[in-house]
Image 1 (tube, one colour):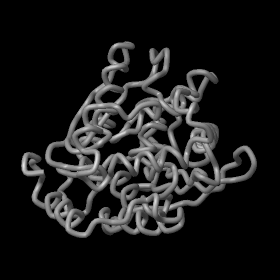
Image 2 (cartoon, rainbow, N blue to C red):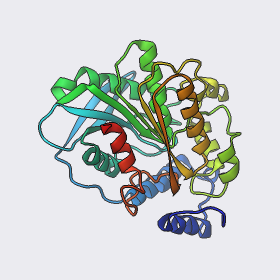
Image 3 (cartoon, rainbow, N blue to C red):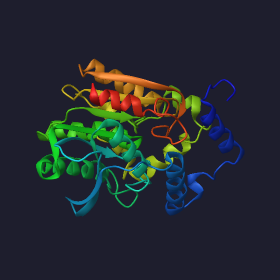
Image 4 (tube, helix red, strand yellow):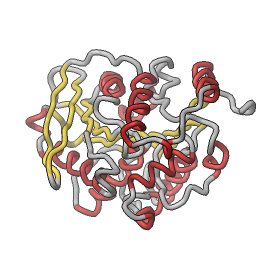
Length: 310
C-alpha cells in the first residue's frame, strides 16, 4: 500500500477501511450487503444541491413498472438529458443512493438527469437490469417533448455496473434501431464478467474498498449461469462489433480493480473507430465520482461536464 499515492481524503478512507475491515459479502445476507453498501455510498457522496425541479415517473417494462426520477437544473427548455444507470454491482444502490450525485451532475452539466430504478439481482437476474435501462431510455426518447427534453441530445451515463450497462444499452439500441444517442459517459465500468484475470484486479484484489472477492460475489448474484458472462450484453468488452457507437467518455480511477476493464474498453472502442476519450483520475479509488469531500476537479464532475458540453 505504501507505493500507492492517494489524495489525502482518499488515503484516510483506505486506512480506515484497512483498520476496520468489513466482513466478506459471502458471510452476509443480500439485505445486509445492501444496507451496508447503500449507507456507504450515501455517506461518501454527501448532501446534494438544490435543483430547479424534481419529477417522478413510472416506466412500463417487461413484467411491471420501474421508477424514473428526473432532475431539472433550470426552468425552460427543451433541455439535454442524460440517463443515469447507478452503480452497485446490479445488487445494491438505487435512485435514493445516487440522488446527491444526480443533483450535482444536473447542475454541473446543465442537463436533466434521468435516474433509472432498474430491478436488482439476485431477485432479477441478467439481463433484466440492462433491459430495464434500455426500456427507460426508449421511453424518455419517445416522451421527450412532454418532459421538456431534447431527444437529439439524449446521453447515457452510469457508474460501475451502470457504467458497463451504458455500453450494453448502446449496443441494444444499435441492434434494435434506436433510440439515437448523442454521447456516452461510462465511469469506472464493469465491462467483462467472463474473466477477472486483468492487471488491476491482480494489483488491487484485496487492498481497496472494492475487492476482487466482492466482484466475484456481485457476478454470482447477477448471472443466472456463469456462461452468461460470455454474452456481450453482460461483457461489452467481448462484443464483436462496436463500430457506430456514439462519442464516449470512459473514465476510471487510478486505484481500482476495474481500471483495466475501462482501459481495455476504451482501446476496443477506439479500434472500432468510435470517438472515445479515455481519462483516468489520479489518486482516487472506486466511487470517487461526486464524492462530497473532494473538489469538482478531483471528484470528476468537471471532466464529465466538459465532455458533455464539448
